[in-house]
Length: 357
Image 1 (cartoon, rainbow, N blue to C red):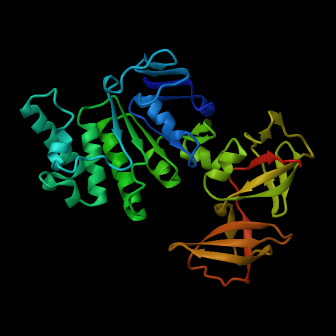
Image 2 (tube, helix red, strand yellow):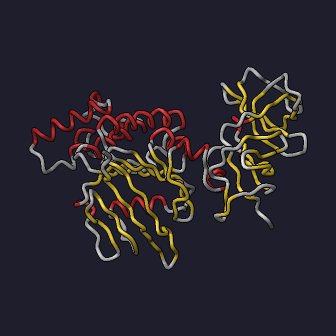
Image 3 (tube, rainbow, N blue to C red):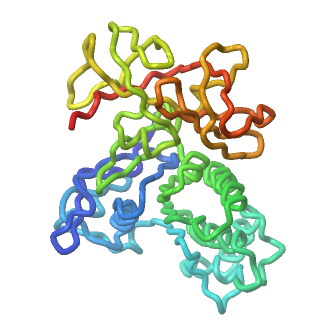
């Protein structure tokens, strides 16, 4: 049975009468990895700081293991919450060696216990060979692993990671994301990551909350955020895609300019009104929904192309003038201006009522 470790219940926070977190709620089970994903300024780091106890809240509650640690009337000191933190800039002590950085927060242990725990953490993060090095002698990825080891060393109930990979190059960021997830899962650590990078969120988290203007728009798996977004904002923010105009034919079919789609519509509503027959809708078409097919009679003109190694992302002009994206294996290398055959393969139909001006 899952055990709820963290409960964030309708919390709010304001700066100078400006609301930056608005009635926000989510929960995280023990051993799960959650993520707050959103654009800069959406309030995600503020939520993390409220959970850590670095900032008070003006409404709602934060509970850890069923115990209230924050409300508008009460705030438990950060050092008493048993929460670990990994910062964007690593926050390592430059005058201390790697092993001394890791043992810094273990003052309540005996010297022998500190040494044993530090050795264990160095083994876990793969840095036992640099135990006596100083931070400036390490790469960015190694410094981030030291910061992770230091945060995990006291065995916190909850680990918070604030944009932990933003200072690293893209390739290292992707590799380290997978390494960090493996470490957290092997340790059974409950964690929350804050990031604006979808790839990081998808690589690390079990559950992701997409934020906008201090609110969580959707809390879900990466798969559902991409294939079953519940709002236009989530549909636009997560992944790539375009909206094509369509019309609801009946309860199980919608027509767009590329053809008819069979609908198992679960999230085709706005303003809490379900769509009816004849309603005009905007249908989300992802790059993987449009497949290259030389034999198809349906043609589209290539407007732009972006080579991505194994794949090419084509921007296409459709027969009626709309544009769409298509992700195609890179051995199908076509020129800009060329007409190519395409076909529609949509497994998840996502539609929203058209916005009237």
